[in-house]
View 1 (cartoon, rainbow, N blue to C red):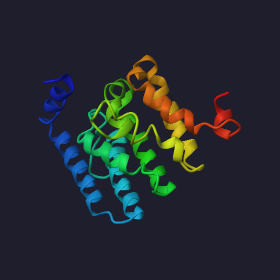
View 2: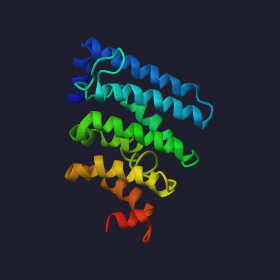
View 3: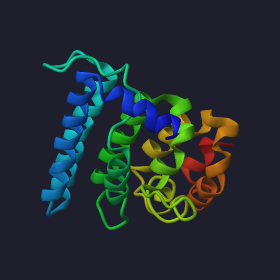
Length: 192
């Protein structure tokens, strides 16, 4: 059993963590009933609320989950987030999904993100394919202009600080970022 699986197994003994898992399950269930993009934004909002409660505590009945940096159902969450990054979806869905990524990454912290990079960069568990085809990394190439600043902020805030620990995903990161940066655009000048 890996250290992460063991850690999650130990957390399941805590009743507050089980409440957190239940809330995540309930939020994920709302994705099953989506039929249009507005439903996706609503489902992401529910997931954000659970994740926000985890990272900031004291809202409503649920107490702080900040002591739980292990995100439950992270594979399902990453797949749902990757689906929300589909190029055919409007920018509002992309922005809400980026908000969700940001909340989750803040909750997890840089160290855990470096270990789970392959999960959140693409939303699939196939390590050979995950950094190339779906999810967060390839979004920049097809993102609307109003989405790009938020996406670059997520990259800057969560992936650049990984430094050397980004190496396993560096090719996917670069293949997603470089085609999206056009010389002369505001985003290109942001990094000169």
